[in-house]
Image 1 (cartoon, rainbow, N blue to C red):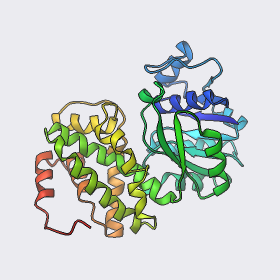
Image 2 (cartoon, rainbow, N blue to C red):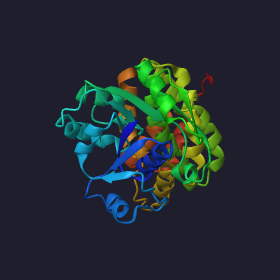
Image 3 (cartoon, rainbow, N blue to C red):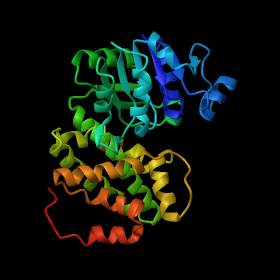
Length: 317
């Protein structure tokens, strides 16, 4: 399979490395202005891995025309702009695989919806689930999910992408998987805030109640609420809520401590969209709203936590 991976950050470069080692013809695209790409071209390595010579590096966006499958791993809020660049190339008949987790915060649309709108004559799939590049490079295995509205595309991708370190499952709920994957980053930010407050023992309750409120949102949006308890959301909690490698958890902790994190934390950009969706569908998202209040309204983390504890008593389910 001829594949172009768009995005030369830590996850994009890991995906390219992984697919190359499976024997695919892989190109990794990054903008010439990107510091990550400059280093990869000059040294063929980043802070995590040395890339093999078999993997092609390019800053020519037109290279996607030579691939059957285009894997995208960039900032979720930049996806529509990227699609505009690709649309100018008159791309048709490709399969786009989104290895990114977020909701477009200006429209509250899922990322597969963005691609389908902008590049309608192509197929779209998502590749989601737990795992960190630091562990994949060490050969530590994990389970992930691939989903698409096109069953044949989904099956072909799982056959082509399965290898020794990733076991893929067939997704059966594109709506739920995308919302769940995006929302887990917000729960990760909340987990970091608990760490910053010295209240790590509350993470068990955070995981349980966080999954429950996202299940409600998924159901309201037309998905299967059980997806919140699958690999896209609850299954990704260890990597997001506890891991030292989690950007979202680290961002939340830095936020509480008044420190600058300085790296991308998708949960920060996702939570406004979740709050808009909660209001539109009349769904209670108390944890997500508490994170939003802290990040965007300036509420003190300790006060936001007490507001959660002061909510009226109710049944667990």
